Structure formats: C-alpha cells, structure tokens
Length: 292
Image (cartoon, rainbow, N blue to C red; front, side):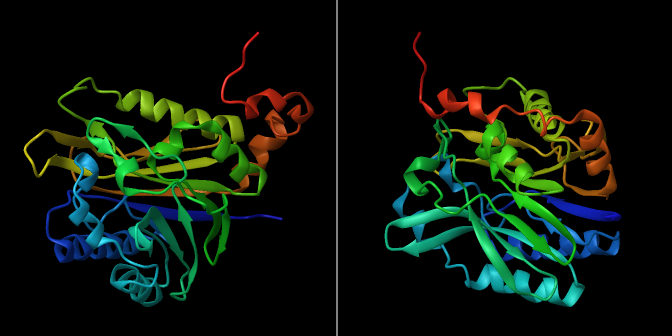
C-alpha cells in the first residue's frame, strides 16, 4: 500500500527576550511554511523564549507553562485554522519544582495528541539544563496524525542512537528533532558538520527520514557570563543519508522538504537492517559501562 508523499516544514528564527514577539514570529513562519505546502510543521526547541539555560536563575522557572497553557493554545488554534500538524516545543510546568523540556504534538484539528518530554538532559558550560529540567518520563511515541506517522526527539536526545531505533521499530516514517545548538566562548569550533553527520547516520541505520530544526542567532547570557551563537542549518536527509534540503547557517530561514514515504519501505526492503538485528546478543548495552 502506497504511503504517498508528504511536505514537512520547520522553523528557523532568532529568539528575543519578549515572549509574545517569539510566538508571533513562530506563527508567521508556520503560516509561511503552510503556504509553501507543508502539512506537518515543527518548531525549534523552546521557541517562545531566549535559551535561558545558559545560567542558573530560579526566576526563569516562572515562565514554565502547563500543557494547556497559552503557548500551546495559540498553536492549537493555528493548527486548526491552517489544517496542519504542529509540533509545539515548550517549557512544561508539571508540579511545583518539576519542569520538563517538552514538545506537544497537535493534530490538524487542533487536538493535542500527547506530549514528548526530553529524556537526555545535558549539563555543560552554557547548557545548564539539569538545573531546570527533570529527565523525561514519557515513552518514545510514534504519533499517528492526519499527515504522517512520526516521532519527536529533542536536541540532546539526537546524539544517542537508541531512542531513534525505538521509534523506527514502532513504525515511524520520519523523526522531527527540534534543537538549540551552536558555538560558545568555551568551544568556538564549528561542530555543526559532526551534528549533521551523526543524525544522518541515525537515518541510514534505521532507513527513514530525519528532519532537524534549530534556532539561529547570538544570545548573550543575562549575567554577562557568555553567549551562544546558534547555527541554524536545519536539514532533512532521506533513508539513504542523502541531503534533501539544508537551511542557511547563522540566518533565519524556512525549512521545507517533500518526503517520499514509500522510499522508507523501499530502502528497508533493500538494506534489511532492521531484519538482521541480533537482539539476543545486545544485553550488555543495558550496562552503564562494560569491563572485561
């Protein structure tokens, strides 16, 4: 049975300190992506604010919203109006003192199908996420939407092969990876190609499409301790690892790509990578380290 083709879109813009301005910018880009034919659209990680995790500041927790908070309600209305699926990334309030880095999957009728909570939480200079975010407790879910069957992983998740494999085994045709990655004063080396190659590798190993979006622009830490200069460079690669489209570096852009979902089955029928897995021999991978 043919799955046909699907056009997806992803935002890529510079965030500012004003929440309303960021939401309006996201809405503008989503409308522009829909006008270009995109039916499933993903926002960049934590799109309605600056990347506040550069420093520790308890007051930043006050910006967290519940799943049905104002940001997602805006995205719900927009999804219904435009008849598109939207992945809405947000800082989630669960209970006092428990917050998540999350993405709500909103179907084209405006209904929230569910939420993915980022599992892998980084802790390094300028990426102090463990201070803010509890490791996600949601399953790795394949969302069956009006337009496509896909999974969502958030930023640091994308460096680990295991979650992507799980989503492939659950039947995803593609994955959205909303991100916030760039250079900083302690590491000015451009590792964007490593980032691209690592995620393209996931697509090859699992023979499906990977769709990566990222914010762009320089954001200075509010205490003057440093900055992050986000790459942009959102991209899509196909089940063979070929680049379908690639966004501008360090500039705002609209990422649009047509996915041939039948190519996923064709690639899997040729390569048979999922068939030849030896799950009976992988028990050791469940250990934090392996000593001989």
